[in-house]
Image (tube, rainbow, N blue to C red; front, side):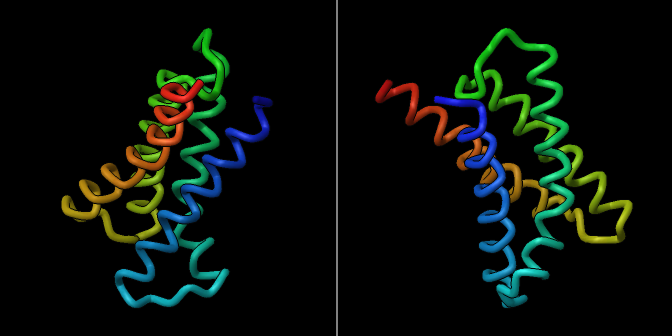
Length: 115
């Protein structure tokens, strides 16, 4: 598996997370709105990829790599949302962390189980 496929998958799953959140709050699924919602988390995903790539002796499909990406996605995403004046209510942080954990670690677990 090349490095590009896991990166694209992580980005797609973060965008899916944003779209699901917008849909559940009846905010609409226009591309601009979804990308605006996803942007802070995509910045976090990027940070996570850089940190994991520089600090771990792991491939992107490994759970350890995914855990670094996950933590950075949530922490940076929430910090940027706070700076931008968007919501960071405890319930949102909990739901976002749960969904992103399922998405970003879930595909890696499946790959591990079948590979």
